[in-house]
Length: 111
Length: 492
Image 1: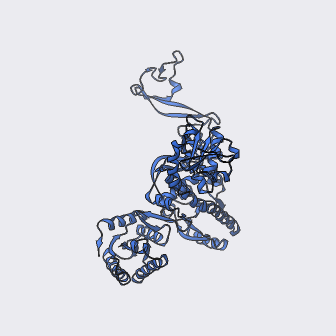
Image 2: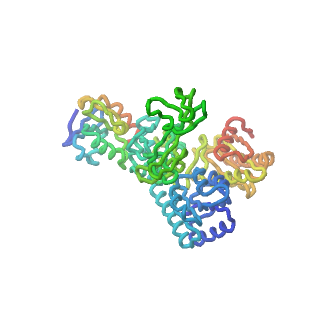
Image 3: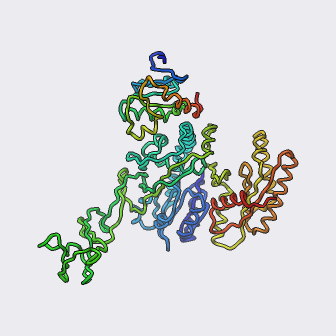
């Protein structure tokens, strides 16, 4: 595991996981530096807003990016459920989702 | 851009006059059919791609309103109504029409209506075409990358149509969500998705909203302030009256007949409740047949429930073709002209000359007795051959094949080469025997051309000839001959 610059980017199994805590600071250039996005859950409204921004993005690498939620025990909102690829129980255990995220990237055809 | 138009008016002279006025008013209207009554118009809209209908309201048999209720029009089909009676104006807009013309009207007023229809069409095409194509690819790629085989709609209160389609619906503003259904329908027709019925829904005919308040209203004053009361029929004495007539003040839980004074105990044995009486608290009218009206909670328009738009909600499975598109990332271009309908693995130009010709012949068969056949030639391995060729050479080969077919058929006939290996033919005024002779001759020439130029590729031919009947549909007919050629075809 390693940290890069001011962004919280953690590398697992060759994939760069960008961990986002403050939604307003999420920039396109930052997303381009990552393979996988991990969003720390704040509220249904804010999280849905960020997810919609990502999934409707014009760049294929962004809208097809594997996205996981953290700091949430159960996802009750059905719209959020359809827009994420799963949940991360602990930021130190990103390898739990690395294999699946890698497969999504492979099938999406984005490097 | 031209709009394909249909004129519906029972008076021939008025149809002719309107045709001339339309020609003066705009060169963007192509009148492709006329109908003298609602029934004929129904048959035409079933078989033709109509963009604009000039509809007379007062016709014998089926009125303009009755036609609109009976017709299953495309979401893009616009209607300009005309009538001599302005009393219908308000009601006319309940049907979601584009404009309403009060007879007599001038060419300039007609031009305004046509321009409005053209503007609507252009706006609709501009906003949907490029967005539609890229949205299809986005959805396919998302499903493919997540190995999601089924796109299942989620009942959702905050959606315009009442259902949320994962990933897809977020791309549309609330008031444009109906486009989600249109887009999925296009993807299904293009063969990228297959559909399974989930639910039938009713939508506002103005804004496509599903949140509707449907209630009984007074047929006289249209107020919803009604009080209903059951009608009771007492079997033994035959007395029929409102439930309040049977209420006994001395014992509130008992029912006593006001005629014979017997106590009513058991429903189904002593009495029944055959209907209900509605009392209007607004105007005092009484009725057993209140109107059923819907009020849209989005645009607040009130329409009779018969005028609501019925749509089907489906779940969708990604097809193998859809996976191929998602994997290849090829840009989808279904455009306005090049929409393709897929029958099995084969594509025919949707709305193209061949499809239109077949539909016209089916329509003609309903009105007259004559022979007409459809034929299909399959050139097995042609796809393998063209895959190995330079794309320009492959295109030229298809042109050569089409030319051979055109040379052997008379001008009444129509043909379309459906890549990779099918050639469809329509042979009006030919019975199966005559058509078989022509088609066999064409097959021989095609085989000769292919053998002379590509002797190394073994191309095996098959053909079927089938009579066109008035009960046929275009898609049904195409499916039938494809099934036939894949099973019991005549190998040449």
